[in-house]
Amino acid sequence: MKEEFLHYLWKYSLYNSDALLDNEQKRITVIHPGEYNRDSGPDFFNARLCIAGTEWAGNVEIHTRASYFDTHGHNLDPAFDNVILHVVAENDRRVFNTKGEEILTSEMVFDPKLYEKYFDLVNNPFIIACQDEINCIDPVFVRQWLGSLVVERLQEKSDQILKIYSETGNDWEETFYRLLSRYFGFRVNTEPFEMLATAIPFRIIRKHSDNRFQIEALLYGTAGLLEEGLFREALNDDYYSGLIREFKILSSKYSLQPVHGWIWKFSRLRPANFPTIRISQLAAMLSVTGGLFSKALEANNMSQLRDTFEVTASEYWDDHFVFGKKSRRYPKITGSQATDILLINAVVPAIFVYGQSRDSSDIRERAISFLEEINPEGNSIISEWRSSGIEADSAFISQALIQLRNHYCKKRRCLECRIGGKLISLGKPFRRQDELILEP
Image (cartoon, rainbow, N blue to C red; front, side, top):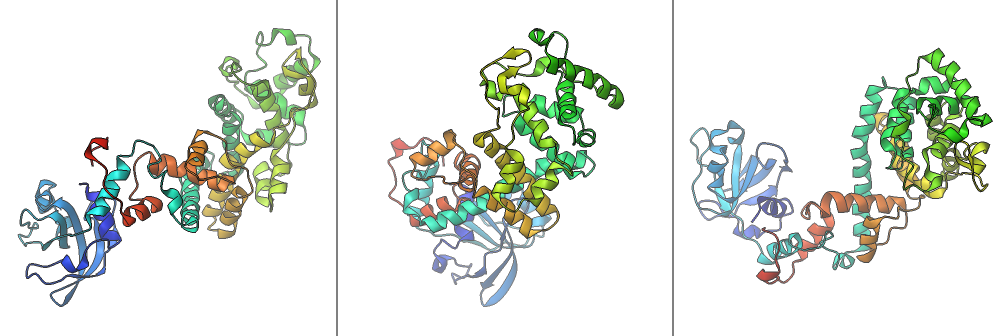
């Protein structure tokens, strides 16, 4: 039996309170179980108990066996001197603190069906352990939990964003530019786009916000895509030659050091996702007076946000995918799916973190509300949930389901999941021992 299961029982009072007894076999009344501690020290801080008619305030430590108090070295650690109750599944030894004082130890009695259900979940062979039972839970309850998971996911992304913010000298426009560029790589070219955004600062691009061609020259040149010999068929291409001339002037002015053009990946990509196309679309977004992030913050609805981030590559790319080679003519728009990816992974998180840094609940809530208006991702994780009967009708739900699957289901954190905790509290008949695949 794992201690985390006993923590769960104690935290939610899912034990037989009448059987929680002191050394005189008198009932211990739990006024408050305390604050759950995941770091070093006792498991629950500031608990309030009534023992032998006296109210006590202090910490509670929990083990499967009382002897583990000594095994874990707590008897030698002053941090455990304020433990007022030692709760165990098996009381096999008297234990003492560093002062030599005996610590009151009491066995926790609980319905075995609770443990059976927990055991059943953690031994389920499927990643989503509760996939056959999740529909038994009230949809309102599930929705509330998913709402918390969306915020949790956004807060996790804040660490990465704030790191960039610090690296850029606390410049939100520069931070957003780097973040947006990263996701323009759409996984395959993520690293090259990150290198590009670092090599050509936004402060330089901003000086040319009124001239899209110059921004393209800066981006293509710094990306190394204007290197001699990279596109041999483009030697007599006017647009390509114009970019080279413009970049020579600008690179000399700003002392730019291009990245290597051969790092960009074209193979196994749909032509519409070629970096040549994506860079032109990025240039279109950056051709905004006043800054792209400022415009994102000003958006009050999804329509305004889409107008900013759903753009078209320059006219040259209407009949090209690479420099110097013509193709069937059609405008290269970012498209709703690509725009959604940028909104979900870069725009919304940046707005949320900005709101958090300004302690603005209005900005944070606006960021979350945007997710409710964006289409859900279509990937294998969302397909897994669909097979379990959970349908994602927006990015708000799909982002929550990704967080739930990767950070709870996959790691078997069922006790920390509100859905898992709810199912465990209901109990279920125990499976046969030969069906189990994991140790409890």
